[in-house]
Image: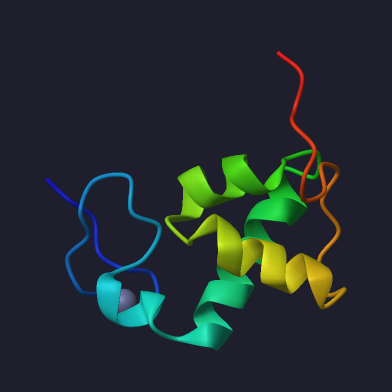
Length: 80
Ligand SMILES: [Zn+2]
């Protein structure tokens, strides 16, 4: 059984944080990233992207705009 999108109730693909419709919405994307970082403060952009389904470039854009604090910045790789 798939669970619904937390924002609009649409059906989700597995591992999706929200549905494709809501993925078009800047505000919802931003909120999802911020939410994820609150729960997982040491995540890098790649981890956030994997968890939320939002593109890395969009997440890096939020970071560049200074609205998000992520440990690993653009151009750096997380250590294994
Ligand atoms: Zn939705």
